[in-house]
Image (cartoon, rainbow over all chains, first blue to last red; front, side, top):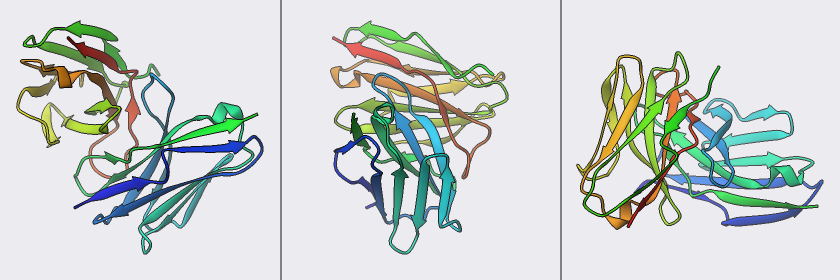
Length: 111
Length: 114
């Protein structure tokens, strides 16, 4: 069956370090992969979209990689700050299918 | 541009009742999707509407239905509410349907069924 897995439910890191979140998927061949941030009690906020023919994409302190051979995406936040503490969700969209979300990784950045 | 708005923000209903939730997408966005979010199941896709037509549907019972109006505003309806329907219902809009379009989410409607 098709599955999206995000590493560990929670990730704790020290301020200033790089946070790396993983998204693995099976039985999909997505043309695009998206990352969202969600704060408690709020709707997800779009962060980055990466296409299958792009290996890497950056936006300010954020970097996403997309390895279609490994069926994996890595999401990096460099120079992390306590304000980066949130749940991060990856999502896949194939053809006309619905956007399917992983269960998310809760990131906690300690000052 | 104003973001996605959802009304009401909070709702308490009893089992067996029905409920209608409303969503106004970002101006110019023609696709509206609905999701249910619970602690146990995460974010689950309910359905998507584009140009007043349902384009995709998730694995939810027929008690969950929706519609989209000509101005792209959308409503979802849940009939014969069950305790398990307690959740955060999120609406998201995007420019169009299909691949490659990021979604913009509203704040959600927190539904509690007692």
